Length: 100
Image (cartoon, helix red, strand yellow):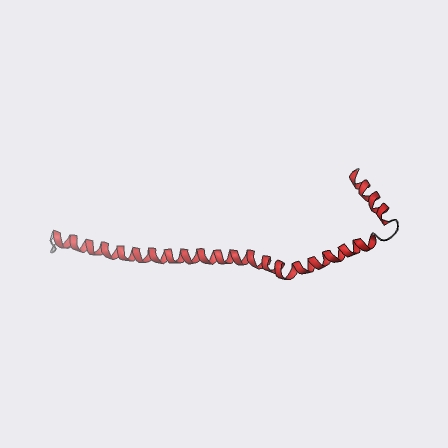
C-alpha cells in the first residue's frame, strides 16, 4: 500500500475495483445466460426437426403408397377367394398355425 494514501482513499480505491469486477461479472453472466437460452432454443428446434420431418415424410409421402399396397392385397385376397379350393387351403394353414 502506498503510505501517502489515507485510510479513506484506500477504501475508496478498493470499492472502485470491486465495482469494476462486479460490472464485468454481471456482463459475463448476461452473456452466459444469453448463450444458454439460445442453446436451449436451438436444441429444441433440432429435436422438433428430427422428430417432425420423418413423421411428415411418412404421413404425406409414404403412407399413401402403403395404403394403395394394402388395397392391392385386399383385392388380391378377394380374387383368391374365388378360386375353388382356396378357402380349404387357407383353413388348413390357419388350423396348422393354431396348433403350434
